[in-house]
Image 1 (cartoon, rainbow, N blue to C red):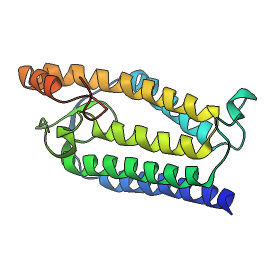
Image 2: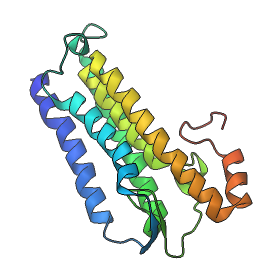
Image 3: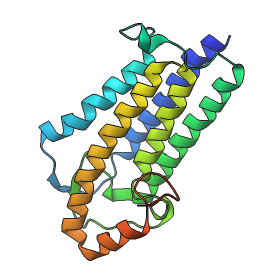
Image 4: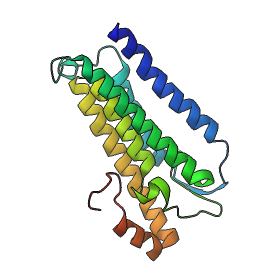
Length: 192
């Protein structure tokens, strides 16, 4: 029963998020600057690889399929709650940033620096939410490949937010620098 729920619930959560993202992607400002395709691939391909690690029945290599802890039913429900919370935070951030959003590193026409709502908690709340969703999905999987998926996701998002921050500093200067000093990047209540 739980195996069926795992095979159904987590793909449904990810599919629901993807549909929401696609619908919301239609209402954005025009792009005035975007990262090159090769740069984009350096964070998209690792993210795809991380998600594949979580969703294939068996990952390549015996070690990746070894359980971290003995299986317990609470793990599934905690994982579902963490994944749902991550998606909720990401969607809140996406709705809050509005027409400035892009799935890749871009500068938009009339780009604004958003520092309220979830952006007052962390500078990159969409990434925080997605990372939390991957952590929840990895917890549900309960195997070493989940740890690898979380690390790969973190590295890909870290690379992407570093590029975004360079562009924001270039565009907003001291205003963004002050925001960086005041608000942590990904983990709420942590030091910069």
